[in-house]
Image (cartoon, rainbow, N blue to C red; front, side, top):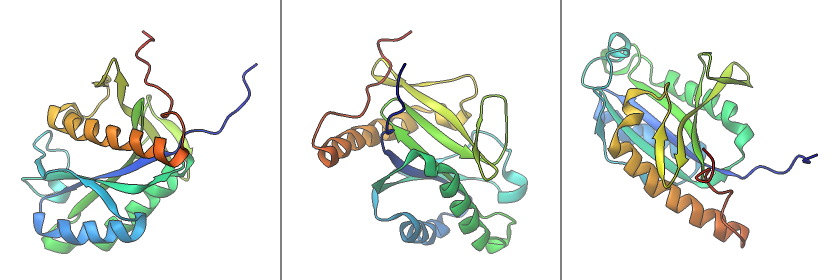
Length: 191
């Protein structure tokens, strides 16, 4: 029988979606107040993957990722989602749109990326407090791979390049903080 063990700490990141690039510096500043210094920031990507958010957020959406220096416990993902929801509400009504910013937190482990959502679906697991977790990308055979439910924008190579860089940093940070081996390996040896 396998005994329960302590799970690896994870790298926290947020995906910020907005039609207003002018809001991004303020969102960044508020996120740093919540989660600590930003270690890695992506370029600002054109979203263009779906018009799902258009009625609430407007057109010509952009996405940027912010990854934070401190590692977090995996079981804090629900609380992190509630914190970003609260921050989103502080921006409500700005720029003449109902929802000027969408902030989605996620955590990275060496084998996967897990996003938080307040919407249930068949592939999501309840985390508590009305929040669900979804493995959005998995790291197998040296690269991030999509799953049938992976969001269209998370299938983009430029996102994967950002997450590859973040994974390298996470592995180094994990090793240095632990003074030992890297976090649990990916599942490259499993089919």
